[in-house]
Structures are given as C-alpha cells and as structure tokens.
Amino acid sequence: MTLIDPAARVDAYAVPTVKPGQKTNTTDKTFTDTLKSSISDVNRLQVEADTAIREMVAGNEKNIHEVMVSMEKASISLELLVQVRNKIIAAYDEIKRMQI
Image (tube, rainbow, N blue to C red; front, top):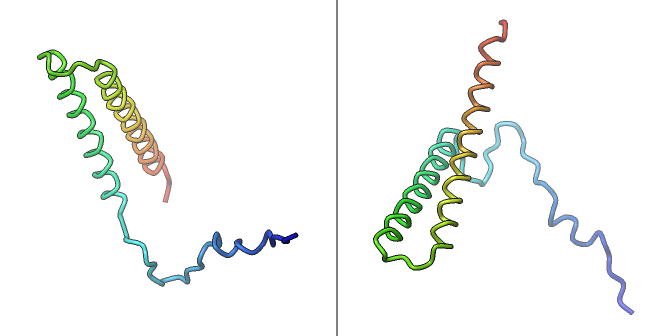
C-alpha cells in the first residue's frame, strides 16, 4: 500500500514572493493596454456577427445556429464592455468627489 503525502505538491501552488521594486517575469501590461485589447476583441466579435448575418441573408450560410451564436457572443461581450465602462465612470466620479 502506497501512502500519498497530501502536502507534497503544495509548493507547486505557492505564490512567489516579490520584494518592493523587484521586477517580475511576467509581461507588464497597463490598464490602457488591457482596455484597448478588450475593445478590439468586442469589435472583432461585432464584425464577425455582422459578417455572419450578411452571409445568411445572401444565402451563403446555411446554419442559422452558428449565426445566432455569433450574434449572442457579440451582444454579451458588448454588454460586458458597457458595464465595465459604467464601473470606470463610477470610480472616476468617486475619485472626483474625494477631498484632498
């Protein structure tokens, strides 16, 4: 019978400690870069959904399910982007109201 040590792999999940001022090995992505990337992804999904609709109307696309899925992906991603924008504006308004 083999005994398994439950703590044997715990170190694989440990968070590495980073000292102040020390660079990490990950690529540094700013908030602006992340936001631009998200906006371009939403735009890409919107364009894909529009293309799928145009192909379906033209008679090129036979599968309506794929068209509906692409439309829903585009819709949900746009709704998420709008909610993120609303949170950013709310945070900015909160910062504006802060007294120095």
